[in-house]
Structure formats: structure tokens, C-alpha cells
Image 1 (cartoon, helix red, strand yellow):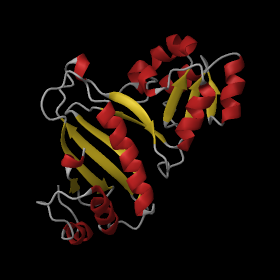
Image 2: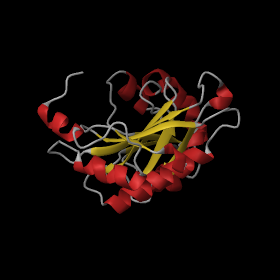
Image 3: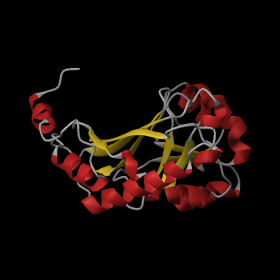
Image 4: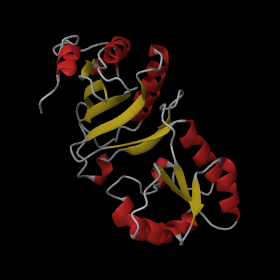
Length: 229
């Protein structure tokens, strides 16, 4: 992959052989963000898990204390009183059965997170082929299958993010924007790392955290010292 001139300049600021303290890594990521827009700060965590085994899977969610800096659109599948509850909580879209053809046939995907009450999972299950590959399928572990739709919507709007292993056993998550203060990014990063360390599957042998890299959307990766965790 060929990088442009701005990236090359930014990359000069980072010593690829150094494992940085989280605070130094955050400051460096902000300094090395080359784009004119407000880039997202991302964390990429390589784990020692083998996701092919169910007992070594990691999936959960954490509310970042300072949010993600992104306005998140929430779709709630509900019926009865829960429809009003979801609307009152600030869900962007609320519905049921009638949304199936809109998503399946019209390709409507103008939302970032899907929440469903347990009694709607039969309906939502029919969207598995569409929502699954996009990581949008509601899941009890992530708190998106619940009767407490008020809490679910409030948490998501406040900056709740999901984390899960990808096929290569790496977790990729946003922890804020380059425009955030160093302190706000540090607090978000710490909240994420606390959740990941607690989520360590007991079946994992050897080193759990293999590497942690912080990066901005368009900037170079900065390696973080995993010994801290």
C-alpha cells in the first residue's frame, strides 16, 4: 500500500522500534495525524486467543467515559410499551416487522447500532445475512438484546462501544477523536483496556496481549508497551 507525502512526514515522528507509554503514544498519534478532518483514534489489540474455539472468544461492550466523538444512530426493534420507551430514550428509529423489507429489499442501513428486545429476536433473526456480516446483529453479551431499552439507548448515545475478535484474533475499536484532549483519550483508552483485560478467556494460555497499536484514521501506528497491562 503506497502512502502519500503527508503520511511519510507523519511516520518520521514515530520510532517503530519503540514501545511507548500509553500517554506518550496518545500524544504522538495526535501529533502525527496528517488529515485535515478530525480523525478517529483507533486501538488495535493483537491477542493470544484462538477465536476458532468458542471458549477463547471475546465479545463485550464498554462505555467510554468521554464518548467516541461520533453521533451514533440507534435502531430499536420493539413492540408494545417498549416502542414508546425506546422513542423516549432517544432512539433514532423504532419499529418491528415492517422494517424487514426496508432493510432486506431496499438496502436501508442508515443506523450504527441495532438494539432488540428478546421477544423481537425471531424477527431480527431473519436479517442475520444482512446485519451479521456488518457486525450489526444484536447480541446479549454486548447488551444490545435487552428489555431495558432505555439503558441500552442511553449507554450507546453516551459512548458505548462493542469489542470483539476479528478472524485474525485482533480487536479493533475507536477511542475518540484527534480533537479530544490527551486526558480524555487516556481515560477512554484505560476504560477499554480494563474491560479487555477483564474479558480474558480462562482458556487462553501464555501471553494474552501480544501487541497494542494506537493510530489515527490516516496516520501511522504507534506501538504501546503491553507490559503495563
